Image (tube, rainbow, N blue to C red; front, side):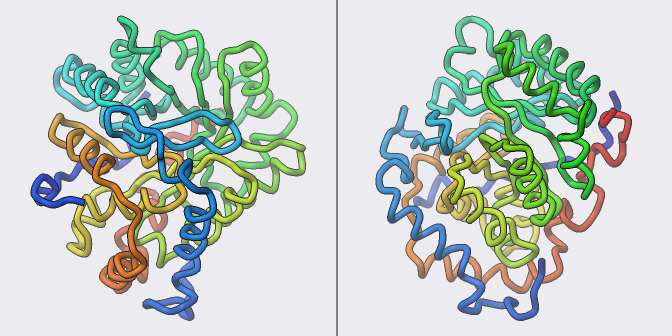
Length: 360
Protein backbone atom coordinates (compact mmCIF):
# COMPACT_ATOMS: atom_id res chain seq x y z
CA UNK A 1 0.00 0.00 0.00
CA UNK A 2 1.20 3.47 -0.81
CA UNK A 3 -0.26 5.95 1.64
CA UNK A 4 -0.19 9.33 -0.07
CA UNK A 5 -1.99 11.24 2.64
CA UNK A 6 -0.41 14.53 3.62
CA UNK A 7 -0.09 13.71 7.31
CA UNK A 8 3.17 15.48 8.10
CA UNK A 9 3.31 16.73 11.67
CA UNK A 10 -0.23 15.72 12.52
CA UNK A 11 -1.11 16.53 16.13
CA UNK A 12 2.47 16.28 17.33
CA UNK A 13 3.50 19.89 17.81
CA UNK A 14 5.12 20.48 21.18
CA UNK A 15 3.99 23.37 23.36
CA UNK A 16 7.07 24.60 25.27
CA UNK A 17 4.84 26.43 27.73
CA UNK A 18 2.92 23.34 28.84
CA UNK A 19 5.39 22.17 31.46
CA UNK A 20 5.49 25.64 32.94
CA UNK A 21 1.78 26.30 32.79
CA UNK A 22 -1.10 24.45 34.30
CA UNK A 23 -3.93 23.94 33.75
CA UNK A 24 -20.87 25.28 7.20
CA UNK A 25 -19.50 28.66 7.48
CA UNK A 26 -22.45 30.96 8.08
CA UNK A 27 -21.88 34.71 7.85
CA UNK A 28 -24.54 35.13 10.47
CA UNK A 29 -22.37 33.20 12.92
CA UNK A 30 -19.03 34.79 12.03
CA UNK A 31 -17.23 36.28 14.97
CA UNK A 32 -18.34 35.72 18.53
CA UNK A 33 -22.09 36.01 18.40
CA UNK A 34 -24.64 34.51 20.78
CA UNK A 35 -25.52 31.99 18.12
CA UNK A 36 -21.86 31.11 17.79
CA UNK A 37 -21.77 29.74 21.31
CA UNK A 38 -24.64 27.24 20.94
CA UNK A 39 -22.25 24.33 20.59
CA UNK A 40 -20.44 25.31 23.78
CA UNK A 41 -23.73 25.87 25.58
CA UNK A 42 -24.93 22.40 24.64
CA UNK A 43 -21.69 20.89 25.88
CA UNK A 44 -21.85 22.86 29.12
CA UNK A 45 -25.40 21.70 29.78
CA UNK A 46 -24.37 18.13 29.09
CA UNK A 47 -21.42 18.26 31.45
CA UNK A 48 -23.45 19.93 34.17
CA UNK A 49 -26.29 17.45 33.86
CA UNK A 50 -24.26 14.29 33.44
CA UNK A 51 -22.36 14.80 36.67
CA UNK A 52 -19.12 13.13 37.67
CA UNK A 53 -19.19 10.46 34.99
CA UNK A 54 -18.94 12.97 32.16
CA UNK A 55 -16.17 14.88 33.91
CA UNK A 56 -14.08 11.78 34.40
CA UNK A 57 -14.49 11.20 38.14
CA UNK A 58 -12.76 7.86 37.60
CA UNK A 59 -9.06 8.12 36.86
CA UNK A 60 -6.09 5.84 36.44
CA UNK A 61 -2.67 7.19 37.33
CA UNK A 62 -4.17 10.68 37.20
CA UNK A 63 -5.69 10.24 33.72
CA UNK A 64 -9.47 10.89 33.78
CA UNK A 65 -11.74 8.24 32.28
CA UNK A 66 -15.10 8.79 30.60
CA UNK A 67 -17.93 6.57 29.42
CA UNK A 68 -17.97 5.58 25.74
CA UNK A 69 -21.62 6.36 25.12
CA UNK A 70 -24.16 3.56 25.45
CA UNK A 71 -21.43 0.90 25.41
CA UNK A 72 -20.67 1.67 29.04
CA UNK A 73 -16.96 1.13 28.37
CA UNK A 74 -14.59 3.44 30.24
CA UNK A 75 -11.90 5.07 28.10
CA UNK A 76 -9.09 7.48 28.87
CA UNK A 77 -9.72 11.16 28.24
CA UNK A 78 -6.73 11.24 25.90
CA UNK A 79 -6.05 8.58 23.28
CA UNK A 80 -2.92 7.77 21.27
CA UNK A 81 -3.31 8.53 17.57
CA UNK A 82 -2.09 5.62 15.48
CA UNK A 83 -0.69 7.38 12.42
CA UNK A 84 2.32 8.79 14.23
CA UNK A 85 3.13 5.48 15.86
CA UNK A 86 4.43 4.14 12.57
CA UNK A 87 6.80 7.02 11.75
CA UNK A 88 9.72 6.50 14.15
CA UNK A 89 12.99 5.45 12.51
CA UNK A 90 13.35 2.67 15.07
CA UNK A 91 10.25 0.47 15.53
CA UNK A 92 11.29 -0.09 19.14
CA UNK A 93 10.75 3.62 19.78
CA UNK A 94 7.15 3.25 18.60
CA UNK A 95 6.69 0.34 20.99
CA UNK A 96 8.19 2.33 23.87
CA UNK A 97 5.79 5.24 23.26
CA UNK A 98 2.75 2.94 23.20
CA UNK A 99 3.77 1.00 26.27
CA UNK A 100 4.66 4.13 28.21
CA UNK A 101 1.24 5.57 27.40
CA UNK A 102 -0.46 2.40 28.63
CA UNK A 103 1.68 2.30 31.79
CA UNK A 104 0.91 5.96 32.48
CA UNK A 105 -2.87 5.45 32.41
CA UNK A 106 -3.96 5.81 28.77
CA UNK A 107 -6.03 2.88 27.53
CA UNK A 108 -7.46 4.15 24.21
CA UNK A 109 -5.38 3.25 21.16
CA UNK A 110 -6.28 4.55 17.69
CA UNK A 111 -5.12 2.94 14.46
CA UNK A 112 -6.12 2.26 10.86
CA UNK A 113 -5.57 -0.45 8.27
CA UNK A 114 -3.97 2.05 5.87
CA UNK A 115 -1.69 4.01 8.23
CA UNK A 116 1.88 3.95 6.92
CA UNK A 117 1.13 1.02 4.64
CA UNK A 118 0.14 -1.09 7.65
CA UNK A 119 3.28 -0.34 9.65
CA UNK A 120 1.31 1.47 12.38
CA UNK A 121 -0.75 -1.64 13.08
CA UNK A 122 2.32 -3.90 12.91
CA UNK A 123 4.18 -1.83 15.50
CA UNK A 124 1.13 -1.56 17.73
CA UNK A 125 0.73 -5.32 17.55
CA UNK A 126 4.29 -5.69 18.78
CA UNK A 127 3.65 -3.26 21.61
CA UNK A 128 0.56 -5.18 22.73
CA UNK A 129 2.52 -8.36 23.43
CA UNK A 130 3.75 -9.33 26.94
CA UNK A 131 0.41 -8.60 28.60
CA UNK A 132 -0.11 -5.08 27.23
CA UNK A 133 -3.17 -6.11 25.19
CA UNK A 134 -5.08 -6.45 28.47
CA UNK A 135 -4.37 -2.78 29.29
CA UNK A 136 -5.73 -1.43 26.01
CA UNK A 137 -9.07 -0.50 24.51
CA UNK A 138 -8.02 -1.14 20.92
CA UNK A 139 -9.59 0.75 18.04
CA UNK A 140 -8.77 0.51 14.35
CA UNK A 141 -10.44 1.44 11.06
CA UNK A 142 -10.99 0.00 7.60
CA UNK A 143 -11.47 1.67 4.23
CA UNK A 144 -13.42 -1.04 2.38
CA UNK A 145 -16.91 -0.17 1.17
CA UNK A 146 -17.72 -3.63 -0.21
CA UNK A 147 -18.18 -6.74 1.89
CA UNK A 148 -15.20 -8.43 0.26
CA UNK A 149 -12.83 -5.49 0.73
CA UNK A 150 -13.96 -4.93 4.31
CA UNK A 151 -13.63 -8.60 5.25
CA UNK A 152 -10.11 -8.74 3.81
CA UNK A 153 -9.03 -5.60 5.68
CA UNK A 154 -10.54 -6.84 8.97
CA UNK A 155 -8.54 -10.05 8.71
CA UNK A 156 -5.36 -8.16 7.86
CA UNK A 157 -5.78 -5.77 10.78
CA UNK A 158 -6.32 -8.63 13.21
CA UNK A 159 -3.17 -10.33 11.95
CA UNK A 160 -1.02 -7.20 12.14
CA UNK A 161 -2.32 -6.25 15.58
CA UNK A 162 -1.64 -9.80 16.81
CA UNK A 163 -5.05 -10.08 18.42
CA UNK A 164 -8.17 -12.13 17.96
CA UNK A 165 -10.41 -9.21 18.89
CA UNK A 166 -10.53 -5.48 18.12
CA UNK A 167 -12.57 -3.58 20.70
CA UNK A 168 -13.85 -0.93 18.29
CA UNK A 169 -13.65 -1.04 14.51
CA UNK A 170 -14.72 1.97 12.47
CA UNK A 171 -15.48 2.78 8.86
CA UNK A 172 -12.68 5.17 7.91
CA UNK A 173 -12.98 8.42 5.93
CA UNK A 174 -16.72 8.67 5.46
CA UNK A 175 -16.18 11.77 3.32
CA UNK A 176 -18.34 11.21 0.20
CA UNK A 177 -22.07 11.61 -0.20
CA UNK A 178 -22.37 8.02 -1.43
CA UNK A 179 -20.28 6.41 1.34
CA UNK A 180 -23.28 5.71 3.62
CA UNK A 181 -25.29 4.03 0.87
CA UNK A 182 -22.32 1.94 -0.26
CA UNK A 183 -21.57 0.76 3.28
CA UNK A 184 -25.18 -0.22 4.02
CA UNK A 185 -25.97 -1.64 0.56
CA UNK A 186 -26.52 -5.33 -0.06
CA UNK A 187 -23.02 -6.74 -0.35
CA UNK A 188 -21.65 -3.67 1.40
CA UNK A 189 -19.06 -3.32 4.14
CA UNK A 190 -21.58 -3.35 6.97
CA UNK A 191 -22.30 -7.00 6.22
CA UNK A 192 -18.66 -7.86 6.85
CA UNK A 193 -18.64 -5.79 10.03
CA UNK A 194 -21.73 -7.49 11.42
CA UNK A 195 -20.39 -10.93 10.59
CA UNK A 196 -17.08 -10.11 12.30
CA UNK A 197 -18.96 -8.82 15.32
CA UNK A 198 -21.09 -11.96 15.50
CA UNK A 199 -17.93 -14.06 15.30
CA UNK A 200 -16.39 -12.14 18.22
CA UNK A 201 -13.65 -10.57 16.11
CA UNK A 202 -14.85 -7.04 16.90
CA UNK A 203 -16.91 -5.73 19.80
CA UNK A 204 -18.21 -2.32 18.72
CA UNK A 205 -18.78 -0.53 15.41
CA UNK A 206 -18.30 3.15 14.58
CA UNK A 207 -17.33 5.49 11.76
CA UNK A 208 -14.99 8.41 11.18
CA UNK A 209 -14.74 11.35 8.82
CA UNK A 210 -13.21 14.80 8.65
CA UNK A 211 -14.83 16.41 5.64
CA UNK A 212 -18.40 17.53 6.30
CA UNK A 213 -20.91 17.47 9.17
CA UNK A 214 -23.63 16.91 6.57
CA UNK A 215 -22.04 13.62 5.50
CA UNK A 216 -21.84 12.52 9.13
CA UNK A 217 -25.53 13.29 9.53
CA UNK A 218 -26.28 11.37 6.32
CA UNK A 219 -24.40 8.37 7.71
CA UNK A 220 -26.37 8.50 10.95
CA UNK A 221 -29.66 8.82 9.06
CA UNK A 222 -28.78 5.92 6.76
CA UNK A 223 -27.96 3.77 9.76
CA UNK A 224 -31.30 4.66 11.35
CA UNK A 225 -33.13 3.57 8.16
CA UNK A 226 -31.45 0.20 8.56
CA UNK A 227 -32.36 0.02 12.28
CA UNK A 228 -28.72 0.32 13.26
CA UNK A 229 -27.15 2.56 15.90
CA UNK A 230 -23.43 3.20 15.84
CA UNK A 231 -21.46 2.78 19.04
CA UNK A 232 -19.09 5.65 18.28
CA UNK A 233 -18.45 8.48 15.85
CA UNK A 234 -15.08 10.16 15.30
CA UNK A 235 -14.77 13.73 14.00
CA UNK A 236 -12.66 16.89 14.23
CA UNK A 237 -13.41 18.87 17.39
CA UNK A 238 -11.25 21.90 17.99
CA UNK A 239 -11.18 25.66 18.49
CA UNK A 240 -11.52 26.34 14.75
CA UNK A 241 -14.18 23.75 13.96
CA UNK A 242 -16.44 25.76 16.25
CA UNK A 243 -16.44 28.58 13.68
CA UNK A 244 -16.46 26.82 10.29
CA UNK A 245 -18.67 23.99 8.95
CA UNK A 246 -18.84 22.83 12.52
CA UNK A 247 -19.08 19.21 13.67
CA UNK A 248 -19.44 20.53 17.20
CA UNK A 249 -22.58 22.48 16.37
CA UNK A 250 -24.20 20.12 13.86
CA UNK A 251 -23.23 16.57 14.78
CA UNK A 252 -22.34 16.59 18.48
CA UNK A 253 -25.91 17.28 19.69
CA UNK A 254 -27.22 14.36 17.60
CA UNK A 255 -24.65 11.99 19.10
CA UNK A 256 -25.47 13.10 22.62
CA UNK A 257 -29.18 12.57 22.03
CA UNK A 258 -28.51 8.96 20.99
CA UNK A 259 -25.81 8.40 23.62
CA UNK A 260 -23.24 7.54 20.96
CA UNK A 261 -19.60 7.68 22.01
CA UNK A 262 -17.86 10.86 20.83
CA UNK A 263 -14.29 10.48 19.59
CA UNK A 264 -12.66 13.87 19.11
CA UNK A 265 -9.76 14.08 16.68
CA UNK A 266 -7.49 16.78 15.28
CA UNK A 267 -7.57 18.89 18.45
CA UNK A 268 -4.76 20.95 16.90
CA UNK A 269 -6.15 20.63 13.37
CA UNK A 270 -3.05 18.67 12.43
CA UNK A 271 -0.33 21.25 13.19
CA UNK A 272 -2.14 24.06 11.38
CA UNK A 273 -4.00 25.59 14.31
CA UNK A 274 -0.67 25.97 16.09
CA UNK A 275 0.78 27.47 12.92
CA UNK A 276 -1.94 30.13 13.10
CA UNK A 277 -0.48 31.34 16.44
CA UNK A 278 -3.99 31.72 17.83
CA UNK A 279 -3.87 28.96 20.47
CA UNK A 280 -1.30 26.82 22.24
CA UNK A 281 -1.22 23.03 22.25
CA UNK A 282 -2.54 22.80 25.79
CA UNK A 283 -5.35 25.25 25.01
CA UNK A 284 -6.31 23.15 22.00
CA UNK A 285 -6.32 19.93 24.01
CA UNK A 286 -8.27 21.43 26.90
CA UNK A 287 -10.88 22.91 24.55
CA UNK A 288 -11.54 19.49 23.03
CA UNK A 289 -11.55 17.86 26.47
CA UNK A 290 -14.06 20.44 27.67
CA UNK A 291 -16.58 19.18 25.12
CA UNK A 292 -18.58 16.01 25.93
CA UNK A 293 -16.00 13.86 24.20
CA UNK A 294 -15.44 10.32 25.41
CA UNK A 295 -11.81 10.59 24.31
CA UNK A 296 -9.60 13.16 22.57
CA UNK A 297 -7.24 11.42 20.14
CA UNK A 298 -3.91 13.12 19.52
CA UNK A 299 -0.76 12.09 17.68
CA UNK A 300 2.29 11.41 19.87
CA UNK A 301 5.42 10.72 17.85
CA UNK A 302 7.96 11.22 20.64
CA UNK A 303 8.20 10.79 24.41
CA UNK A 304 8.05 14.58 24.85
CA UNK A 305 4.79 14.87 22.93
CA UNK A 306 3.36 11.92 24.87
CA UNK A 307 4.22 13.63 28.15
CA UNK A 308 2.54 16.80 26.87
CA UNK A 309 -0.67 14.87 26.22
CA UNK A 310 -0.50 13.11 29.58
CA UNK A 311 0.00 16.36 31.47
CA UNK A 312 -2.81 18.06 29.55
CA UNK A 313 -5.18 15.26 30.60
CA UNK A 314 -4.01 15.29 34.21
CA UNK A 315 -4.26 19.06 34.51
CA UNK A 316 -7.65 19.35 32.78
CA UNK A 317 -10.43 21.10 34.65
CA UNK A 318 -13.75 22.19 33.12
CA UNK A 319 -13.19 25.55 31.47
CA UNK A 320 -15.02 28.62 32.63
CA UNK A 321 -17.30 30.22 30.05
CA UNK A 322 -14.95 33.22 29.98
CA UNK A 323 -12.05 30.95 29.04
CA UNK A 324 -14.02 29.43 26.17
CA UNK A 325 -15.09 32.86 24.95
CA UNK A 326 -11.50 33.98 24.98
CA UNK A 327 -10.32 30.98 22.94
CA UNK A 328 -13.10 31.37 20.40
CA UNK A 329 -12.47 35.10 20.13
CA UNK A 330 -8.78 34.51 19.43
CA UNK A 331 -9.46 31.90 16.74
CA UNK A 332 -12.54 33.38 15.04
CA UNK A 333 -10.83 35.44 12.32
CA UNK A 334 -8.31 32.77 11.38
CA UNK A 335 -11.04 30.11 11.20
CA UNK A 336 -13.38 32.02 8.85
CA UNK A 337 -12.55 30.29 5.55
CA UNK A 338 -11.24 26.97 6.83
CA UNK A 339 -7.69 27.77 5.79
CA UNK A 340 -6.35 26.06 8.91
CA UNK A 341 -8.70 23.07 8.57
CA UNK A 342 -7.38 21.65 5.32
CA UNK A 343 -8.95 18.26 6.01
CA UNK A 344 -12.29 19.98 5.37
CA UNK A 345 -11.31 22.23 2.48
CA UNK A 346 -8.80 20.16 0.47
CA UNK A 347 -7.96 16.58 -0.47
CA UNK A 348 -4.63 16.73 1.36
CA UNK A 349 -5.86 14.42 4.11
CA UNK A 350 -8.03 12.11 2.01
CA UNK A 351 -6.08 8.87 1.77
CA UNK A 352 -8.92 7.10 -0.02
CA UNK A 353 -9.08 9.90 -2.60
CA UNK A 354 -5.43 9.30 -3.47
CA UNK A 355 -5.93 5.53 -3.24
CA UNK A 356 -9.49 4.71 -4.39
CA UNK A 357 -8.58 1.03 -4.70
CA UNK A 358 -8.72 0.80 -0.90
CA UNK A 359 -12.49 1.24 -1.08
CA UNK A 360 -13.00 -1.95 -3.09
